[in-house]
Structure formats: structure tokens, C-alpha cells
Image 1: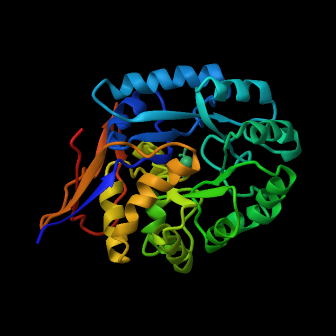
Image 2 (image 1 turned 135 degrees about the vertical axis):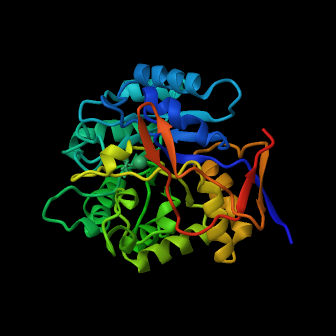
Length: 347
Ligand code: NCD
Ligand code: ZN
């Protein structure tokens, strides 16, 4: 029996499209999304409204006219970010959010924030103007175990910032722990993105039976109890949780290295994987909330007008294991199970 689900066109509230050749190689794989929040961690990062506007033009050019994806731009918060530039870029419709990376927390985060007091003025201005702040929620203190960095971040950074700047709308990006899910579901004016891969893998996938660099991302996948907590949050129907794939392409050469970099490239097969996950948890009726409604509502936008259809067939959908990017290849995330859900996009 063929099963199908029709969804409002989904959005991706956390996406890395990169720049140049990589941008041109990966952009089309996100084209069945309506909108995507584009991460600003280029080298050098996107720190001003003018840079965000120029980057948006490069993305639109790479997408070409046929594709419906609308890039929603973000600024990379630094200790010298000018509050007036942020407010003006938002008022002009150039940016939808600002991203905070603790300095050194992840890929291309060297220009991030070290002293959170130095960005207080920007955060106050954002709260006033209703501009959401997206957090990479990990402390960088080398004394804190990498598996604890998200939980410690909540106590040491996130909660104090939310108390100091009441009214600031925050998104805890790519939560990976039950601590993150619990904090978000117990508070208001906060949302959380959950990635596709964190619903599928735990830390054993990275480390058991050999080291598997294509499952390494930040925040790093945690133990199974945390993965299950994320599954419960994503499938709960709680509108604070929504999809942010964090699809983060890197050349295979950079991942398959003695010091491999962090990021999973999930854009091509994300919707097939999510349909599998939600069906497995008896929550297919909640998939649309997670992928297409909750994030838009959080960002104060209407859901997309059009729809896509997911069809479950007897034969698995075929996705490439790698895609070419100039002289490089990029490995597509392998969920480890066949994907019977196919995406039918009338656009
Ligand atoms: C991201 C990247 O490669 O830019 N990597 C990752 O592991 N998620 C950065 C990020 O979102 O942390
Ligand atoms: Zn990311």
C-alpha cells in the first residue's frame, strides 16, 4: 500500500551554504525548502549588513531562477558589532537573525564572542527591535568535557544572558541533550532547532568499531538517552522545537584527516530521513509542525503557501553517497537505513 503525507513546504532554520564553488555545488540540494536561515560563518565571517546583502546575492545567483528557496540572512556577532548596523539591516529586511558563536566553539568561529559583557549593547538593541539571537550553545572552556559543553553553556551563558536581557528572543541551535530540550520546553521566548542527524545518531556511531569522521559534527552527538530525548522533543508537537538541518558540507579531504573538521551534509536526504524517523515514532502527523509550521511561527512569518508530498514506496529513494564540488567531493550523510520515503515536489 502506498502511503503519503502532504506537508506545507518545509523550511530549514539552520543551514550552511558556504561560498564560491562549494555554494554552487550544494545550493540546489536545499531547493525543496521554502526558506532557510543561512549561517554566516564564512571565512571571513559575514559581520555587516552590507556583507549579508552581498552574500544573499551570491546565494540567489547560485540557486538560479528555477529554485524557490529564499535565503534568510544572519550576521555573525563579534565583540565589535555595531548595534545600529544590526538594527538597520533588520529594518531593511536584509537579515532575519544574529548568530552568536562562542569564540573557538566550532568551524570558523575564531571571531566569535569571548566576553559576553562586550555584546550586551547589541543584545539590548536586538531585544528592543525583536531580532532573534541564534546561539551555538557550547562553552569553550578546555576544562569542560566536550560531552558536557552544551549543558554547562545553559547554566553559565544562556540563562544569565536571558535574565540580563529580558525580552530577547533566542534560538538554541542544534540541541543535542536532554538538558537543552528541558531548558527550552520550560521557558518562553526561546526556541530550539534540532538537526536531522542528531535524531539518528548517537556517539557510538562516531566512535564504536572505528572512527567515522562523517558522523562528526558540533555539538558532537551524545549518548543514546540524549538522542531519545531529542526524538521526543521533535515529535512532541511542542512549537518551540523546529527543524534546522545544520547541513554543513566540507570537502571529504578535510573530514578524512588526522584532524577532521566538524559537520554533516544532510541537505539531500533530510526530508526522507525525517519521514522515516517520525513514522517510526508514530508521529507522522506532527512532521509538518516540526518542518513547516513551528519555525515560521517562531520567526513571526507565515507558513509557506505551497506543499510538497512525501510518498512511501517499496523501493528505497536513491541519494548519491557523494556529490562533486569542484575538484573535491562531499559525502552525503548516511542514516544507516534504507529510505523508503520519497520527496515529490511539484515546484
Ligand atoms: C558547522 C560548520 O561546519 O560550519 N559544523 C558543525 O559541525 N555543525 C558549524 C556549526 O554549526 O557548529
Ligand atoms: Zn551550523
